[in-house]
Length: 263
Image (cartoon, rainbow, N blue to C red; front, side, top):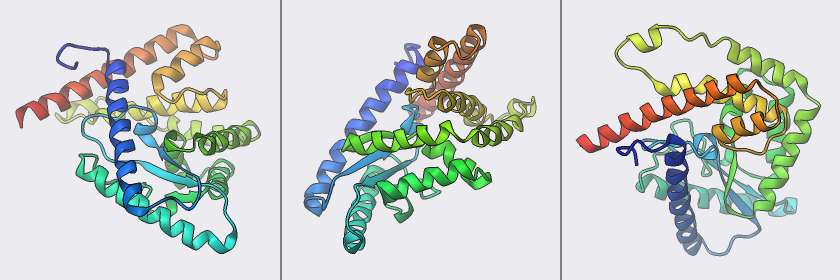
């Protein structure tokens, strides 16, 4: 597809569908090892995987949400899902999806929580958007259902939308954070250009507007289309943003593909 100059968004969706199938199969295998789950749960993708924008060379960003259970069973249930998450992360690593250097994975107890604990996370990030919280929103606000009970993910998404409706201070802080990004010639003149750094403010600002208007799209192109449909941003601006996203993504895919072919 890359050599045939396919649309980078089509490549992203195709790549994401393969990654999802691999992940679901791995979870099935892990569940056979660990036995029946003690309660309902959902495995979620976050970050670029949550946006269906992973590239060929990528690491993992994921988590587990499990339903509310009695306090006396919390340690037992939490222990089961942390163990399951670690096994899933290990097998995904073996399959070529590297472990996240920052530990933003389901096998990390911090990201393997009950639905109410996940809700508390998002409420805190929204109400007190400091530097650490802003970093986490860039990863976890792009969550997407992959396996298990979709209702748990829908419940969390509705919670996020309701919290954002009454917290304009969050958007103020996030806008200020992205405002500090100043593109300069030095980013592309050193001989080694990090395309991801050029894409981050673009995807970040589109995410910000999508959250502001309660849009349901998860990928950057989907969000741009919905912003256009809702007449939230100028058509010319949105067209330029989509062109920039596609151009940068195409360069990124092409470079990674050429590196793989040289190996």
